[in-house]
Image: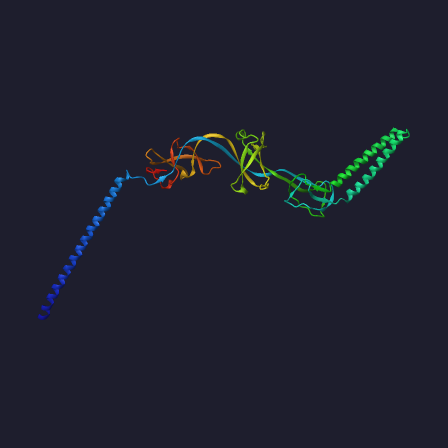
Length: 372
């Protein structure tokens, strides 16, 4: 036991010394880390204080574009929609009872004036023409004979009158027979497009039976209706812009052909007819179109739509003061017809205001900016 005790004492002393040494090292490191942490916090605080102190005089980094609010005469436009129509259209009908023997025309195809739409059986009309021609020839010969006899005082004046009347009657019958033969050929009344042709050879038609519709599309019409205040600003011959949906955003030039001076029944509005040249054939009846009318010019402030911030159904813009600081201003606007990139400011801006038109989402009230 005495030997064990004598050997354990140095071991305990060594362990205690080791622990003291480790604790000292840990304390030095901990103290050094705390000092460094405190120094880092002090530097950050100093940087923050320095940044705040210099913020008021720092050079602005946000560069924006501005638009000067100006009240200028702006066109007052009206937009109306309508359907394109041919300048002329006619439903061609049969004028005698007969059987269809030929349909050379094609539906929706162009046809020239006098072009054959349908040919009817002409056997009976031709027979009537032969009879009428023979009767007229006989009556004409009889009239010539009565005239020769009358010159020799052989025929009476009454006989000569009867012969002349018969000649005129048979001539009228001949003309009627020729007309009936002509009615077996149903032709186009003018250059145009064949529409609504639905007949086949063998069909039987009666007088008045619709044969085909012919549309003159060399010029297209657009009819719209305007109110009493608007119609006073429109004059025949005025050039207008027409946008046809089928042609995308392309604007076609039109001309005001007629302005109604009486309202349409029950509408209280006046018809206005716009004509569009269709030499290229791009416009077709039934296409939807929108026409622009300039009704006059009124002073107004208009700004780019991109300058406007919309929040909870309210409109705002940023206006720069003399020190180039942005201030949010509430405005009242209304759309500009045909100009989605512009808005008319009804209230909230004055002439000369500098309105920010770029980077508006990066702005805040009081922020200094640079302008281009």
